[in-house]
Image (tube, rainbow, N blue to C red; front, top):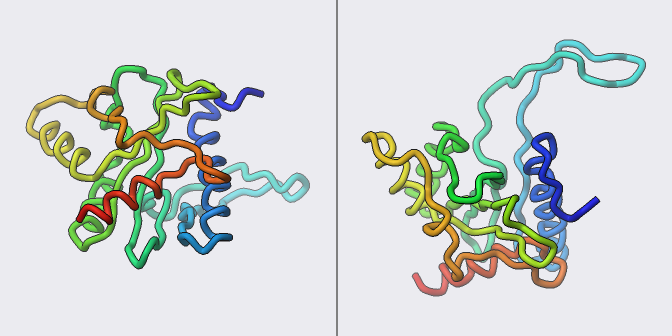
Length: 184
């Protein structure tokens, strides 16, 4: 299987797997402690023979995918993949996720999205970008006023926000976070 499987069923799974490896690397080197936040699910029907869940529902809305600490700062983010080459649709961000990022940002956390453009990605080019909360907020506010319902690729794909692999950090977004911390 290629590094970037673009089927809808696996959308996001490759990025999630790469982030898991990255977080293990960060944690083992005591660089940062970032954890994936599990979604609370209530199981209603479980097949006792196979252990497969037949029926379940989300007990509550999730916050974001990842929360942690880096250099004494709270880091919160959501990781998204899109198969659209020219934009990131804001419908991919749920209102409660946006509100959580906003609240955390207002409290001083480093809040952002990691966005991967799956169709543009190759084995040598991940096409994964760090999107600062400020850019997300600008587009979310404008969309609620009847403006554009997406963020153009050209706005997201800034060289300074491109996330590359470094050592065992397959998605080394902390290099960008570090630059942001140093310039504040």
